[in-house]
Image (spheres, helix red, strand yellow):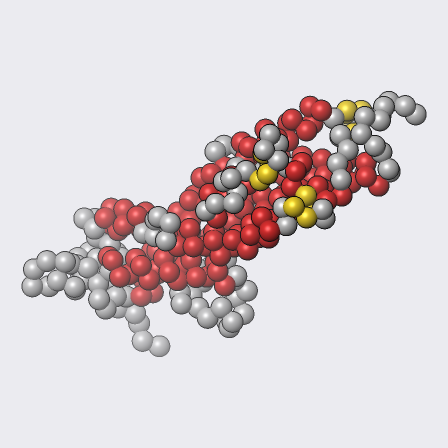
Length: 269
């Protein structure tokens, strides 16, 4: 098997007689002069509302959010007991019905969700570790389940990428999502494909050492994506919020199943 040639700096020169060609200095993917520029370029790719991060969020959440909006007045999925409802107006909060990315941030904002959760627990009776909440309808419980599903799905996005770094070798770039047996989600693969393509087009020589550049790109990009998708968590304990939401939902369902009505004295044997 032929040996691979030693790699040298793959940074694309933009001026002079060698414009478009690789820098070629050193024995690393990027030389000491160009590696900081490559890292800064990596940080700047695909930002903004049309970038790959925003597109990935839209691909994953636009339809579930649209379903929540469409069914907001449906008795089987009643949002009126949730944190996305405006009780004084009797409607969904206007942010939820606007831009999908703004709606996603509003629905999954840990500060808003945890504040709502604390309010519900403060109104409940806690006895022997068991929650006895104020009664709500089956439709309201269904809505809360859907919102919790969105909350959990959103908080797991960064973990999806961290798993690529800690449990698996780098995936092949431009992998066909239907083949190879790697089992990666199509949209996740497209984040890597689009990020790598944009990086190549903006900063790398016209005939690069693809394997060397990919291996340099993969771990750095994975860390960047994970950090970008987790930034909104703002230091909150997301798992604790999710677990307490689940316990509250169980209490709501138990209350409904046992036929309690609002304001029942829960201390009566």
